[in-house]
Image (cartoon, rainbow, N blue to C red; front, side, top):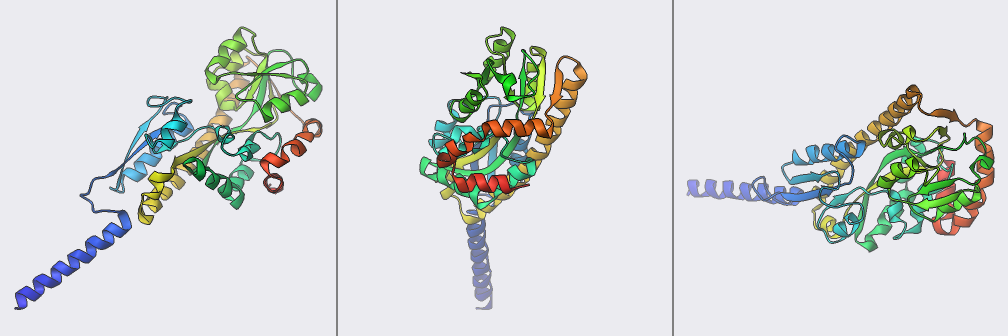
Length: 334
């Protein structure tokens, strides 16, 4: 009888252990792992690429998930990844923030010129209730916003003349990744806009089909735009940042314990991405200065204020779409 009692007690303990494991992780160590496909469009050695691999490394170690990363549009390209995520053919993507404007026009906030004071202010905004509310608004489109991965502030590069005042922009044809606010900004400065895929920009600059564009230091340097232009103006004009997203149904199918493992890994990967982004932008800036191939000019505080004054009407024009509370909060961050 004692042996039977011991066996029953041992069996009961085992059942409790398995139940706890199931509640925490959705299964036991030998259960089938949850596959996650992370698709993105840049190379492995970029900040985004390395952060994706860090996310995989951390999450794979839990024994609960099996993360597969597909860089350089290997699985889905820039135009297909959103629909692939909506269909749950992939579980994580990290597109440009401006791609979300069609789902929520408030995401145009990244294109608002001279809005954010610095990188810390950008991060603080997306971690605030304002940023979280915008992320959560994507659920109706079938997405869950998980994190902001910074790319950096944009600087102008062109082949006509140094851009020190708003008047210097008159008559220039500038590439934009999409219309809307960026087009309105260029018009306010007296410049024209040309919507163009990023991969076509180098040839367009080289053939003088366009005069210039604004982008981050690292993108300008790695894409060699500075080799086919003459002038680089440093002014921190707008932002280029990524939003990391997952499929809403996939997310809702995870247990709270699995979601915590997922978000903890994302937090660590996001810290790495920000550090690498800041380091590579600084390195690219120094590399271009040392190359001697482009003339670098940094706006003075007074010159920057002249741009802010000319572009101030954009805040009123886009207040209804972006939200006055969002704009006011972003401006308050230092």
